[in-house]
Length: 451
Image (cartoon, rainbow, N blue to C red; front, side, top):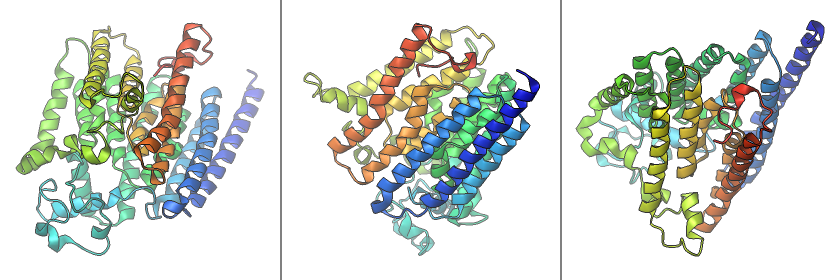
């Protein structure tokens, strides 16, 4: 392309991005007007409109060349988006109050896995600001793994404010963004693609808005991806262990990082996880509560929250399929993918990133989480592998907030159908286009079109 035309194209691209960024910023401010259940349908519409604008910005970033100015523009708006909602009280979730409480409990020298918040042993720690807003305080132990608990402790020793806890989660996002940017450069991809993560409305609302713990895991995942690119196996293992101890999900992507006949990395993961548990072993089995969860409440024991199982049970021959059978099949599917990946020859390229997304997306689809923020961990991978079905999965997760209004089993099934039926249609189209040779995307985007 002619240098003058290329420069003009870059300027136009940046102007369009700036316009989208300003519009998104205004919408983030407007979105804070939502309060209570009555406004949730309005909020979902706003978030979905933001998602459309975001997808346009992502398309511009992937399709057009940029420069340092584009990267700076992306990062400035990423910071402004988060600052615009950082100081507002959380609207979509009250989980953050448990984080502050767990930090306070640990500061008092008490194992956070030992007592529920309402236990009389913790009566002296109660206040009027945090304790009344803790969800499930009367019956549920904390479900957060050790690294998350350590972050809660260190954060609350500076301040027990909700804003400070959210700021720390944004700090972990900053680590993730740095690592993703470094990996993009190492892979020969434009650093401006960091927009795919940094501007995603889901991660902004859930992390800067609600202060969810997931950025801890996402930061460690990004560091693990970078360490694997540098062939640093021990660092990769430590990072994967950190991600798992931040939120259990990342453990499923371990096979994508491992090399055949090399146990150094998985052994590092196992040792680091064991070390992470040492400070909390006094609670015994209670320290593993995050693995066990609360199945009756989540609907996992009955299987009603598992969309694929619920769909099978609506078929004439599937109404008596046990949850245990579905779980066994899901484990076999993930196991088969893991074996396939471990049998692959190490080509020295970035296929491990695509494999990690394949495992992460498969796990998420099989589990079909009930909460939107459980889909956010897929977004960092999209900076490298632009899978259209996974893009849809991430932005459509906002539909799950409709469960605030419609909470019966049949209604929840219909809500999840809004997410997963189009996902599977897009998945089928992606596979068909690739097999027919009609995929016109750049080569680096084709690694995982069917995830």
